[in-house]
Every structure is written in structure tokens, then in C-alpha cells.
Length: 332
Image (cartoon, rainbow, N blue to C red; front, side):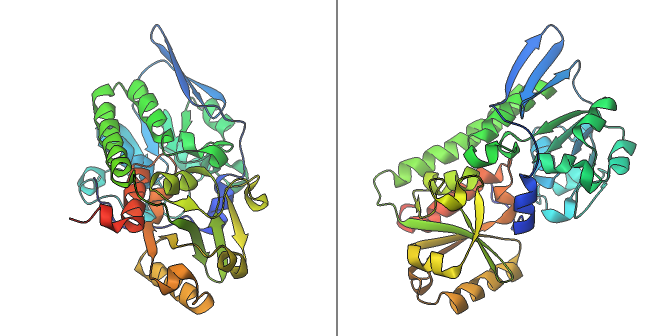
């Protein structure tokens, strides 16, 4: 399994923004007609007449996937580089790729100045014109194909699963003619998931709450890719899409009393760095000292970037969570 460094987590504000715009979503599909490839992505069609030659990764998780597919020579720029460090093994490949934004998506002018023919984004938020970013229409007018990670399609955020990554790998394989490289990544990812499944198959499933703490705000996850991660890791989430708080959105701010009432065996949370991890631990110890997960020190920390849609880190997160829920199954 690929071990990846801790990275900046999606803040609660960003969690809401990432899913705030867009259209209905179906699973991405592809259809090749002669030399033209048509991709259905987030309910829209992308038509490509040739393999893209000037690509922009609008998030480090997307840039990483492009690099692992062997496409460094086709990447014209990388964006939001401060939100998640690339793996050390990839940093040399990205060293000469221009950076067009660090903490936020690039502005419309900055992105179009690169003259891309393809942009790859974790969500549709990166195409929000009201934020000053290039909209999907503006990109289309400039002849730029815009692809969003399947799990980051707006309506998919409620129903997304870890398997959405494989849809992206299949599509990218066809778009960039890198079937061999994509198959290798998919096979490795599936092998990790299969290994986790075999290790936990006959074990009791602890109850789990996945949370995010930002300052004094406590947010719980009850649907989407993150919910699927818990299930695949062998846990039963105490919050779910059947709860009113999560009927229309995968995350909801809750009060500490709601978490205390659920009293999960294990707490899972995403952290941006060591300081954020410690702040979250301090919050739990101070606010919920009698919670079973706190008194038993059953707390699992995952990298914030590993919950980004379309990330190979989704696989890493499943493994990390499973090892935390079932340490006896992963002991050396």
C-alpha cells in the first residue's frame, strides 16, 4: 500500500462549498466514435478529438493521479498546491510544473493564461464563476475540456463510494491512452481493498463516528465516500443517510450531546497536520471526556487529503481506518 503524508483537510466551510453547485449526476460513461471520444461526466458530455496535451490539475490529489499515470510531460500547470503536499516520490516530477495557485482554485484569468486543453478537478466548486473561477461555460468557450472526479459530482456527494475512483481511472485511461498505467493503479487499489476485506471478514464491527472539528464547531459525516470508507473498513457508522440531518447533505454540524448520545466505540477524524490533530484530540478530551472512544483511546486519524474525491488516498484511508478499528487483524 502507498503510504502518503498527512495533508490539509477540507474545512467545514469547504465541505459545504464543494457540493454547493452543479447538476444531476449519473455514473460517468464513455463512448468512442472513430477518432472522437465522448465522456459523460457529472451529467454533461465531454467530446475530445485528440489526447489532451496541456493539462491542469486543479488539486494536488488530481495532479498526483496524473503523475502516477505517467503524464508529467502533459501537465501545463498545477493548482492549490498548499492544500496537500505531494508524495515525496512524486515531488521531483512536479518540481518544474508551474504553480498557478496555492490555497484556492486559480482565477479565471490565471487558468486561461496557461492555455490548457483539459482541466481535472476534484469537485465542481473549482468552476464557480461567482468565486472568480472559470465556469464550465467559459472553459467550453475557450475550447477547454473540464473533467470532475466522479465522486465530486454534486449529487454524487451523497451517494459516492470508494469505487468512484475506478470510474475515473477507466475514463482517464481512455482520454490519455494510458490503459496499462491505469490498470496497474486500479489493480493495486483493488488488491488493497480485497486484503482489507479478507482480514476483517469474520470480525465484530465496532460502532464509529467520523467527525471534523474546526475551532469549536463539531461536524459529523453521515453519507458519501467517507461513509463508504467506514463500512469497507469494518465499522458501523452511528450516523447515516437515514438520519434527518443527512437526508440531503453528507455532512452536518452537530452538538456534542448528539455525539455523546451515540457514544461510538471509535472516533475517526481527518486532520490537516499535527497541530490540527492535537487540537481535535484536545477538543474531545475537554468536551467529551466520558465518551467510550475517548476513555478507551480508540481514535483513528486520517489525512485530510485522503477524503478528497478522485484520490488514490481514498484507498489508503480505508486501510488506515480498518487497521485502527481492527488492530488485531493487521498486527505484524
